[in-house]
Length: 498
Image (cartoon, rainbow, N blue to C red; front, side):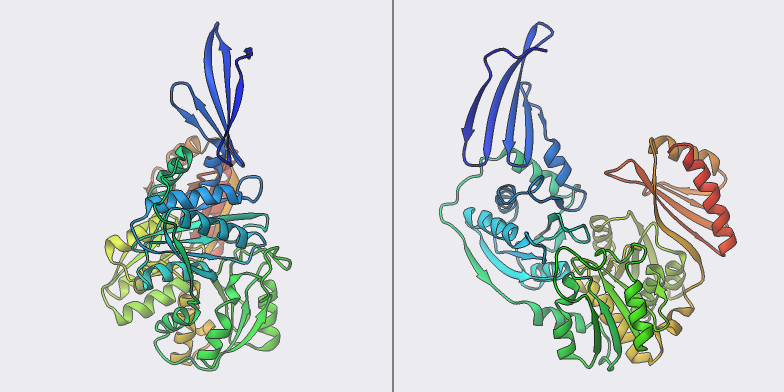
């Protein structure tokens, strides 16, 4: 391929660069338009089709996320905000942020983009992600944006977007349209600039969460590992409004996460919390992730309470007060949740893994509760959204009302052995799933989300990643021996496609 001298370049606006190149292809010409939008490279073909690898990289299944400076810039965030303003119904839009070093600059860019489109903006400052959902629902706003990259390392940042009615935007519901708007550009200027208001929502939020306690919280001794993330923000107000005695770990906000990764599910991430609980003879420990919307518990003996076990405790409590209610669980949640719910006359509905799928199923079935093994727990009376603080308050409320230690409360639910979310590289996930179906054709198979294999003694979920050449393996069995055998069998099949 040769490039004749007709190549030319032009500057359009302040952030968009155009390079038009006439290339010789098979003795003919094809025109390529390269748009350099700071971090976004957009290729527009002469037939009208577009290739947009950079925006495809940062627009994920449930949010927007990328490396700051290389993939995500204030200029691009400004344009995303303008597109979001055009997409949302009339009304005020809330903007919050986490503690990452560049979150303030990105939040400012987002706010400026909204104001440029004539929007009134409610700046709610540094908050947890579940507080952003609350703001949209509680104050009846047109939408919300949270600047965060959740538990990802410090070099990343991103945007979680919420629409009217507290519906999170996802690739299947809103994010693709938003990406296309950003790609198209040419935002219609507002007749009048918008304005920014500021509001501290912390008291309203903590008071809202305490309604889920069911009783006045006793002066329990609680260890909290915030991992230098946003989970520490509501704790002082929670202490002020209750009698809790909190021993804190890594409560200082630091977006570089100097002490351990901001993801409690990683091996070793909760070791310091377990030590703190055991050494100080605390009633329990709570670990939050980076943006404070997920939590995990450690009992008074320093043992991790698995997410499915915690979900069973919460579901049992909610259904004892609301019999015959519906609970939504992702396909990887353990069988104990279904057993508890059905024993109380309730119904369990299965969902694909992921925030948008879970919330949609919650709304469709008016479910009282939803759970994922990732530590996301959803509540109907919280606008069908997940919340780490509500989860924590509920567990502390159950402990206060029963006056039982956490280990005793969850003992009944620790029936099964499991391996959670093992990531395995696979060259061809489609061929692997076909092979597994053939291998286990006598088992009960379900294809709601990847492949679920169910036998009399164990069940497993094998889910291909949306973004990487790998599968996520979860197994649960009646005992350790069966778990080990099933694990070896499955890994052997998977290895043929790795």
